[in-house]
Length: 606
Image 1 (cartoon, rainbow, N blue to C red):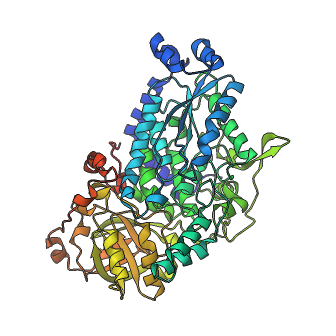
Image 2: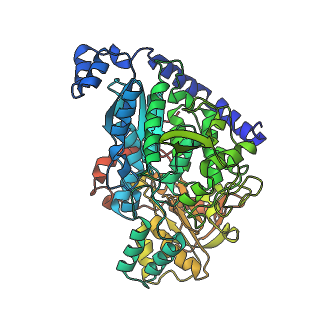
Image 3: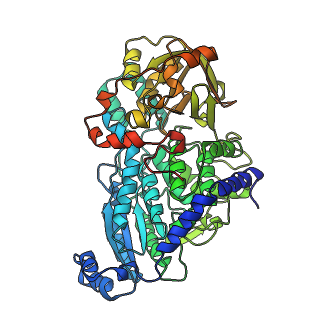
C-alpha cells in the first residue's frame, strides 16, 4: 500500500525544504567514504598507537589485515539501571567481531546522566545540554579514524539523541544501535501514582514513598514507563537502526546476549569493504524521519522528542519543523496506551505484540514509508519479525498479526483516538506543544487565572502553604535553554494533579520541559521565544486569564492586545542557576542555545 496523502505531502515538503543542506551533507559523507580500511590511511606511529593495547590476534588483524574494525561507543555506567547491562557488551561484541573476521574496540565512553535522579534538583539543568555533550563526545570517539563501522550502546533520555547526532557527523560509517531492554514490571503504575499524590498532600511518609519508588525502579533495565528513554528505543527500531523486534526484550537473558552478538555482526557486514555498504547518513533520510515521527505519535511518545527529532534531523541536513509534527499528528491515530498515557507499561506493550504489530498496523494503514533503507538492508517490511532462540541459535519469526491485549495496543481500524495527540499551540504568548494524548478530552480546553512563578520551587512552596486554592494556570517561566538549560519540571506533576483532583481547573504554561512521564494536567510546554530571550511569556502577570486550547491549537492570554504588547518584560535573577553542580561550565551553552522549536541545540542548524 502506498502512503496516505498527508504522509506523502509532509515528506515531499521535507525533501524540498531540505534540498540545499541535505545535498551538502550527502556530498560530505561521500567524500569521507573510504573503500579500504580507514586505518590504512594513517601514519605508522598513528596506527601503532591505535592497536598498542590489543591482544596478539587483534593486533595482527589491525596491523596486517584488511578486515573491518568496529567502534564501540558506549554510555555504560552502573548508576543508570538502563545502562548497567552494557557493562559486559564490549566482550560479546569483540567475540562476535572476531567470529565474523573483524575486530572491535571501545572507541570511547560518553556521559550518561539519569533524569530520574536529577528530577527537581539542580543537576537537571545540565540534562538537556548533556545531549550535545554526548554528540561532541561521540565525534571525539570516532575522530581517530580507526573504524569502518560503529555500534552505539545507549538507552536513556538525552543519550540516544546525542549518539545519533554524533553518529550522523560521521555519516559515512554504518551504525547499529544496540538496546539493553526494560527491567521487569514492578509496582503497578496506578498505585505508584497514588502514593506520590498522597505524599504531596502530606498523607504518607517519606519512607512509604521511598518504598513505593524502590518497588517501581527495582532492577537492571530501562524504567518501564513510556517516557523519553523507551520512546528513544521505539524510535531507533521504527527508523531501522535496531535489529528487528529487539527493542523491548528484557536484559540479563541469553536472547539479549545473542541479539548483541548479531548486531555486531550486522554492523560489520554493511561496511564499505563489502558489497552491502549501508552508511547511517543514507539510512537516516527524509522518509525515515517521517517514519520516526509517525511512530512517536502513534505510541504517545515523549514530548522531549519535539526537540530531539528536530535536532537529529538537522544533523543530517534535514529541516524538520513543529508544523510538520502537528500536521502528521492530525493524520496518525493513537494505537498505544502505555503509562503515563495508560496504566500498562512497556513490558505489557511488548507482550501484546509490540513493535512488530505496531509497524504492521501502520504499514497497512499507509502511515509508514515501506521503501526505506535499514541496517538490515531491506525495506521496513523486514521489521515484521521477532527474534527467538531455537536450540541456542538466533532466528527471526513472523511477528504477531494483531495485538493480543487491546487495552495497551490496538489496530489502526480501532485506535484509542483518531489523532496522535501532539498539538502545536500558537498565540500571543508564543508557540508551544501539548501532549493531548495524556489528557482526558474534557480537559483539552482549559481557562483560568494565571499565577506566575520563576522556579518550580516557588510553585511547590505555594502549594505546600495552601496558597493555590482556586482555578489556576501556573506560569513557570525563565526555564528555557538560555535561562537555565531547560530542566524538566516533572516534579510539579504531583502538586498540580492534587489540585486537579480537588475539582479545580488546572493548567501549566512554561518555557521549560515536562518529560514523557508528565501526567494528566494540561501543559503548554517548550514555550518559545522563552522568557530569557524576550518572549511574551515574560509579560504575563498574576490574575491574567489564560486559555489553553488543544482542540484549536491556541495559547492565549486574554488581555487587551495593545495593553499586553505595551507591558515591560519581566526579568529574573538567574545568578543562583549559574554555579554549582557543574553549571558554571555550561555558561557558553546557555549563551548560544537555540530555541526549543529548532531543537534547543548548541549546533548550527541547517
